[in-house]
Amino acid sequence: QVQLVESGGGLVQAGGSLRLSCAASGRPYAMAWFRQAPGKEREFVAGISWTGSSTRYADSVKGRFTISTENAKNTVDLQMNSLKPEDTAVYYCAAKIAGSTTATVYDYNYWGQGTQVTVSS
Image 1: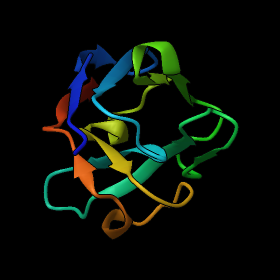
Image 2: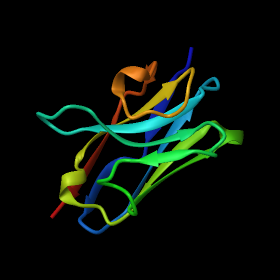
Image 3: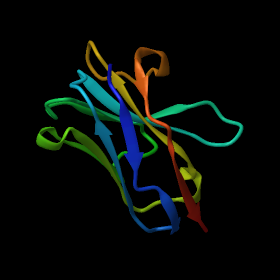
Image 4: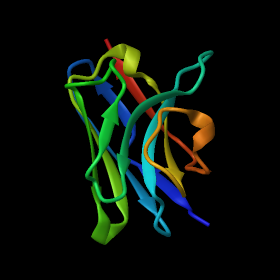
């Protein structure tokens, strides 16, 4: 059983930065951040293997967002820079207990409660 708790969301102006953090109990194989805007499907943002050796990003956030892990603290962070209004969404931390990072919602076994990120124009 893996429990995930997100923190760090908030309101920021376009061009600003936010850092999200996800604290995990247990040791999943891979973790990721997804987001869901009102009226839209949940979409992949970034993923990382638990060792941090492998990462992947959605095209929409490449060069702006960075995912990282700190094994000693069992946390996975998402540094978000150059934020845009279209980044506004509820951001969810997710964990897989087997296999490598994927961009598919249904591959993930555990989810956090979500944290709101709002970017004003």
